[in-house]
Length: 498
Image (cartoon, rainbow, N blue to C red; front, top):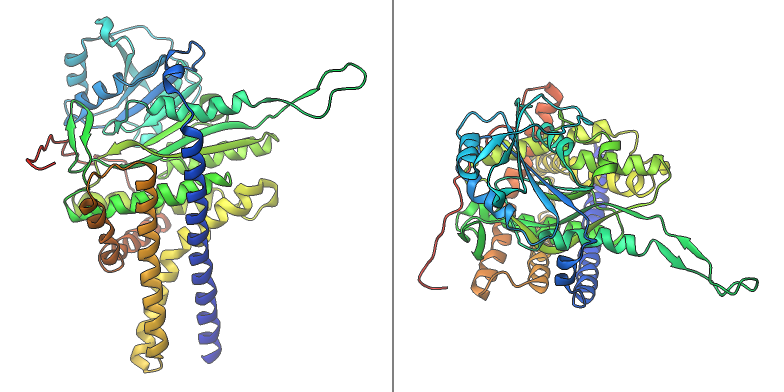
């Protein structure tokens, strides 16, 4: 028994230390990436890109299932983005409410003959609509049989996409006006750098020879945060505020930590684990060659990125996934425990699927960063974390019951971990304020930061519980569907004091 205790305690100490070091490293890398982005971005004139005839075309794909509450407002928002060449593809995934009828009435839609090429399998497409009003010529609406997943609807959108790049988002999201300009820039930067002059002039011909840098950006992501309690006018965020309800407020804090500190840090070393399903810009050719979205996956965003990376490595092609730290997308976070639990259980199940489906890649040197850093991190510090944490809690209880706990050391350790987690979350909020001061008063910033002190006792236990429930559903094969997120719609709250 003593041997077991020594081994377990040593393992937990090493595991916990490694996790704390990883968070510290990500905080440093993310700050470096943000400073580099700010310095480089200060010289960028996006108006030139807006006027350039060479700007790549982008297809915006937004699946919709029973989104009647927000559909019109958000489609209008998508249609008014600042970009020279884009289309908006709304995929009505067999909605049972008035989503489709609202679209038909509002945008004067008519059924049209459309060159739909099914390069990726999806549930059958019934009809395609275009507007009879030239003001909405960029809008395409697909009406299809429900595929019971966002992935299936996204595949139908990719099949209909006319351009070489597609931006996948949720129809309930509000996207910043300059999102396409900012997110296409990493693709264009890499294209510009493909041909480089190297070495001294050739002694025979007198010219500097050139080589092609074949690194290809296959995806770009950006920060996503919650629009709960923000002021919204005609699909535009006019005043940013932290969510007032406690559950969305915790989510806002979590999103900032995950995007600004986590994914931005990974981007610096080209190890981004996934591009959010809420906002991601992809190279359509590579996405199709990788098989598109897996319609049976509960983590379709991570799955498609992993398979795109695998495809590039298997074909000996260099690739990069970029992240930008600016907030480009606002979504309505689950305001109720019922909807939140369904979402997080699905995420937990999805992570278990990713680890299982791509197990041959994990710790496989052939897959380089993907096999030796990205997926091992997901396995050790994302998937196993809830399991180790709940095991540690039971071990603590056992120690207390048997009277064998060293209270002095235990309390010191708990206090250290507690304040370390508070520090990491506070740094994420600070890094976000450095990037762009969305919150107008320090009261709002401090109010959000104070939630970090409550998170370990209120919010984090819920995350662990729902993740474990997701694992259990995966092991037992319990059915779980995409379902309706029961949106409440974005209000237009305009308080007297701003």
